[in-house]
Image (tube, rainbow, N blue to C red):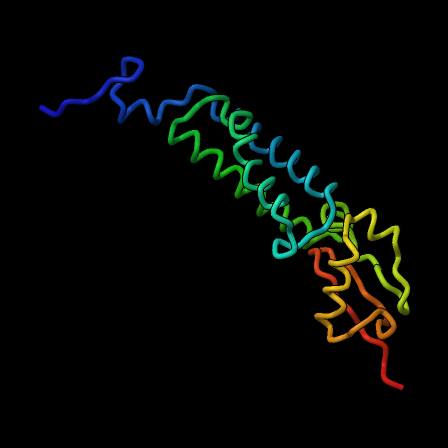
Length: 171
């Protein structure tokens, strides 16, 4: 006869599926935390993953640990994890679909493009509000093959955090 370890009076094979909270609470908690993180990350500004500073990446890595208990209420069951994964992935699909279907929702969740350079002149207020350094801006200008701002007709901070530079036409 196989020997099973007991946890709370149940074999471990059974206890890993027995939820400590109602199933709908996992989904509600996941939705609330997802919405809160979406709002906070939206307020932080636009940066591509490739443009993140080390401290930005560290922040993203520890966010998951910071919100774990608020989502699972201390429940470490496999079923609780499955419920949370399903709720978060489902919510992500819904949000993605909503931004695809509605320009208004897209603008609220993702923002809009912003002009950071216009005819060689930097829009400092946009740089300040999006926390883009002069070095990051000049790196985008150089990636476009330009040596200085004089050759820039317009540089646009896109909703995905990328800076696209459109050069002036040669005389």
